[in-house]
Length: 458
Image: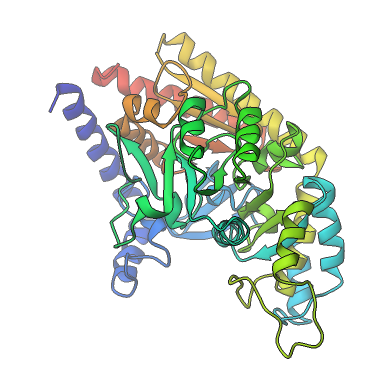
């Protein structure tokens, strides 16, 4: 172990000790939770915070959280995008409360769904929509449809991607070999049999992978956001669209994170043309929800296999996806309120301007200290990365990522009253995020660099 690594380890230990002293009630709750939950909390994701255990939340509103120890935080994590509308949005709360009083889940549509379908096509382009309980389920549905209409098995993804709990997307390239990403444990699935993986922005590798004609679909984000933000190379989307059309491959664009780019996501902003559009998380103001929309051409191919309606059948055929709570009345009401009142053009303008303010301030701090770091901003989202230039692909992230430094930043930030996405250093704005919240971050970032300087790390 190098001297820098030893120093970073000691600094992390010190911040985790400080965290434990600051959070005695959360520590006690964590001990209690471990007696009942498989990984200590309702979701095993909740244990992955750098303090050593999660804070337990008492309340949240707008861009702020208060924990059960009475400590307040500026929340730039926002439920890893699920809270992009802000916490406890009044319009969403009222819509959900009204619908709960009239029935939560009915296995039948409500009139709100008519408004919602039209609004989804207005924002994201004319498509035929299906609602799901998560973006993971939406991606599973899109993959299944792609296999149905192509008769092919394999799904192509880009190394470093994240598309929820989809087996086909659990792969990455590391040291030149394909394996399971993000420390995911093997489970007996033949991932090589169901997936192909290439580096993002690599046209030659993409063309070679699609050439055999065995790929049902390409599943991609417009810009990679979950492995450190990786911008798309000029012209790559057009090449991707041309190659998928030429090879008869379905193109699925997952906008779950890049929905932060604007009212129509990155797809509408940049004129992309996916066969299937997927989104989730923020789409219902924090309630579990996802969507996928298929193009008219994909819909016609589906309807040829499974007619839209056949009253002479006792039970209509389906295409193997669903969920009895998908498209529930309360979720539809929440989605309508979120799109109608929270994810508006005016709010996006404010969120993107706030993200620019944070990114610009962080760049000035980095420059003033002469550090080889950079900041990327995409819409209402920004990220500090401890490398000189934005990565071109997952291999760049793997080669240059400084995991211990990220862990230290996360632990220090929590202790200083700031929450960021715990898996990397990404900041998301909601409509309620204020300039004062950004100013607080700028001061904390300065203090973090001061900590590193005093310890001789930089």
